[in-house]
Image (cartoon, rainbow, N blue to C red; front, top):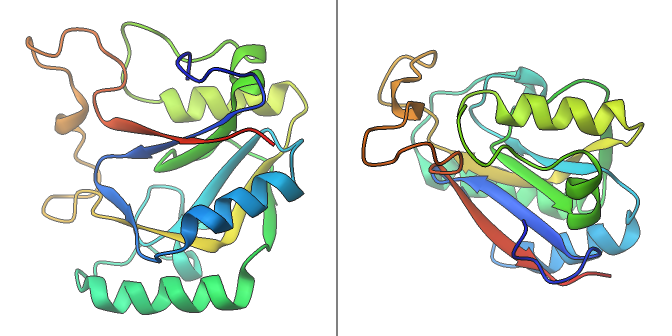
Length: 179
């Protein structure tokens, strides 16, 4: 986030085991941040994540067929393009889209140390600053999320000796220009 040049720029952080399934999602995200510029944090619908409220139809789904999920993503995008649902509690961070100014105001992410619960901690601080968290009902992100293991397994999140204390080893950053 610190690499974004302007405070009004948005960063979209996604777990490395996630992917968008619709080709025009960049345009959709751009429209969303323009329409809701004062939102503290956005997240998206997914197939698998710990917080069921962020899951499609409220359930963790084990279907590995990405083509089925592509149809779901397209349907959600077509029918709920700009629909939002406010979440009043910390979120699972498979996707977190946040403005740099909000990131700075709530204290950013830890630069070293703890890897687990950064999403929960960050989203709680967003709420503590009286900012909204919005679930983008029309944006779907496919999440592999331990599909090959027990869903509660977190061994992959523990840093190895080679990774040191880097907090973001399982995140990538995307950039959207500010509004």
